[in-house]
Length: 344
View 1: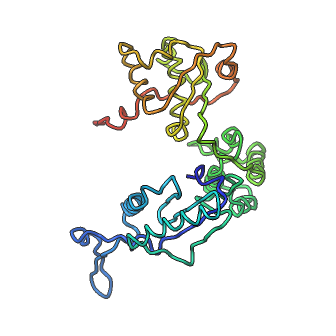
View 2: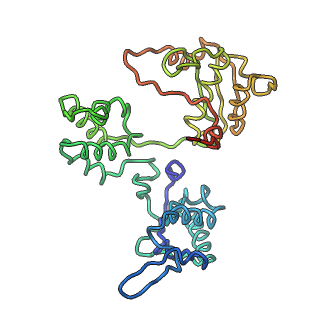
View 3: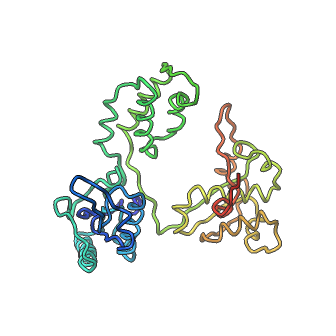
């Protein structure tokens, strides 16, 4: 959502008026909301706050109402609607379409919380504008004033706030490692010099956080990957054939950046020429076929690149570190886990 909003010049932010209360409850289900008070027994006729399925139902309803406008001229998160445009007139036309849709479905807006034709705004805790995506300075200034945590509760709170903006902090996990170690079970809370240095480094990084630019969705994404016997390959994966390891590297990269790649063309550079023909091979191993099926939802073009030319992926696959926390590669399709039945 943030990537689609950024780099636009004008925005309109709309807010639904008591959003949940605009959704009627089916008469057969109204009895499920019954409550008793000194004035008698009552049941809600409209969706109330506190129902476990209310957020999902409301979001699903909003997505259905604006289905043809979302990701084109607006974004929706609960009862907050963000309309955008490259030009003043373009944003005004988009706003007219959204307001007309609200009128058609009798969706009431809270005019006191609406902002029209502004240059920037806060969306999901981030500032978006034609410059890109930035940290909300109001939140970062609060974090800057925090004293060093004196207990686990304060430490969890700080890491939660700082972790919300981890995309703006290079090597966040490495910097926060001394603090994260204190959260381990049966670990005494000893806030030493290493923890204090990490604490101040994270605070400084938030204050000086850069502006993030969204990708250019009109150009293809390029992935340069290479298999490695070190780092993330563990257990049975070490016994995979070269082709399986190379394809596993592609699957891992695609899965890691799926939200970006699923809507764009992807060019994959590999030094393993067999991958070019594997996507059309029907008599491959079941494991390879499973991975090929996983890749078919993407617009992929595999290009052969010699190891000498594929210097980026080749270099990364050969890097070794004295201490590293490996990220395990999940080589199973999502449906294998989603549809699995657990028995005790």
